[in-house]
Each structure stands twice: as structure tokens, then as C-alpha cells.
Image (cartoon, rainbow, N blue to C red):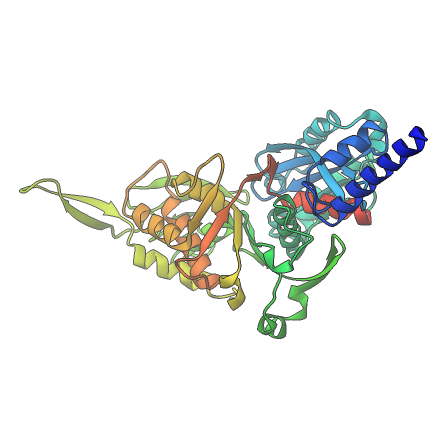
Length: 439
């Protein structure tokens, strides 16, 4: 009788845990990204095992390996993230367009690091993918394909699970979608009201992406079908707006803005967005440029004391702002609904914000479009040879947010580099997709 009573109690406890977890009324939820108490119990009982995925992010400014360890929840088979390896090397793969073999060697070094965190017995079951982004999209087709072919050879010789789809240039809309998924997954925003998910703004080196779930019928009616993606995530069917703009990444835009007013193909570039005291070298897409301020310098006077004035060189913010506006306004869509969304922003948004003390460099934080605008104005009036491009970069961000995406000056942006110790990268979204759908 006592044994029967104990079995009944055990059944009730387990049933309560399972049911409570599923309906999110206990301290854990099937939609949370990390391991919960029930998962730990399942591991102890040998009811779960890990699965792995390795993603190479071949970006325009660097190559990164992200090796992920997941497990399936005992409740509803949702993937939970247990561990992540992140290692970056510079420069990016596209910098080796004239020496593809050397470029592949940088990827080989990253694969060796990934092998260190995956059990040898699981290597053959671990999918491996490299997705190149704007850096390779901007290369001539022949040079890009030369790099991809060398990496394909490397992958075929590796112990990982690969196929013909393992090496590719990623579509920009996929990059935006996977980044958006990463942010919302790590913030545990899936599984409830879709309006609680955050919009994602990703500013890379060669391109920029904007992604969110539209809830305004006007957005759905006036958006071209190719910019609306229909996906399934955590048992919910979602329609997601995503656009990618090649050439509006930080480095690509910098190159185009610096080129304004200079001869086509020139490698000595004078710009109204560079302080007159600056003469510096800058390499982009394999070409080294000499960058200087304008021939006609602009100055500002300030009183040092009652009888003494000091004159110092500046960038005329209005002129730089207008040059950047002319470039940005050529191509960018302005979804009105975005201004009413909660927005996350990362990559170069985060970097430039931390460099100008807009947010904490370790934890991130919230800032506004106005803060970026003010920082740009202030920086352009401050001669600084150690940060020769900061005026241009901040002005570009300010223009992109205001005139590109139509955000108001008081709009708050939540800036992240990591969430719960995990990198904000499209790679997590890609790994999730591959484990559920195959390479």
C-alpha cells in the first residue's frame, strides 16, 4: 500500500512539473533559451543528450567561429542553448581575394578551435556551415568563388558533417532574420504575444539589416512580398519584415562618403567629413587610401579668457550631414511602424556608442537617436587624430536612423553585444535553423 502511495505522489509531482512547465506557470518555461531545473533532472536520469553545430561567420571585417552546444527540452523538444564558443580573427576572408589559399588557412585555424569543444565521437554528427556576408557579396564573382572553393576543399577534408550547401554567400535577408531570431531567443521573447518581440537593427561592415514582426496592416499592405518572410518559431507561425541594404554597412558607406567630390578610382580622398588636421591611411576591400580633410579648412573660435581667443579646425557638421543624407536617402525604405516598436541594435551601433560613452562598454544599455546625433555634432567639432573617422561614422549612424529608418530623435535603442554571455550574432539563428531543417 505504501509503495502504491509513493508511486501516486511521484506521478502527481511529475505531472505537475510537466504541465506547469508547458503552460509557463512554473519558474521555468519551454520558451526560455537556457537549461532549466527539469532539464537538469532529465540529464541526471540520462534522458537527454547534447547536439552541436559549428558556424563560420565570414564577415567583411573578420571571420568568426561559433560552436554551439544545445539539448532538446523534455517538455516539447524545443532546443535549449547550453554553451557557445566564440573566436574571431582579422582581417575578413574577403581581404584574401588575391590569395584564396591563405584565406582558407584562417578558416582552418578556427575549425581547430571548434574541434576542441566538441566530443570527438560527435564530430561526424555535427553540422558545419560557413556563410559569407557583405564582404564577399561586394567582390567580383570570380574572386568570391575562388575563396569559396578553397573553403569547400577544407570542409570536405574535415571530420564535421558537411554537404554541398555548407559553404555559401548568405542572402542579406537571411542575415537579418537570423540576427533578429538570436536577439529575441536570448531575451526569451518567443512563445507569447508576438508584439512583445523586439525589432533588430544590425549594422555590419558591408551591409545593414532591419527586421521586425509587423502588426500594422498598412505595413503588410505596402511592403513588397520579397521583404515579408513567413516562418515558424516555437509552434507559432510568424510573418517577419526584413530588409538588407548592401553598401550601407559602416565600412562600405564610409568608402562611398569619402569618395564624394573625388575622381572615380582615386586613392587619395579629401572629404568634408574629415577634420582638416587629419592625414591617414585606410584600407578597404584590398585597396589602401590616403584620407584627408578638405582643401579649404573650417575653424571655430572660442574664448580662452577675457582677452584671448583660440581658433581650432573643425568639420562643418551641417555639410557632412548633407553629404551623408544624399547617400543614405537613395535606397532606404522607411517603415512607419518601426518607430513604435521596441528596438534592439548591435554590431557597429554598439561599438560606436561605447567608444563615445553613450552606454556601458561591458553591459550595454539604452540610448536614443538624439544621443547619437549629439555625439556626432560634438565629435565633428573636436579635432582628434586618434579617431579620424569618428565624426563621419557617427554622422552616418545619425542619418541612417533618422532619415533612413524614419526614427524620431527621442526613440530609444537597446544596444547589445552579448546577452546572458552569448554573442549577438546571426550565427545562433543559423545554427538553430540547420539543426531543425538540415544543412
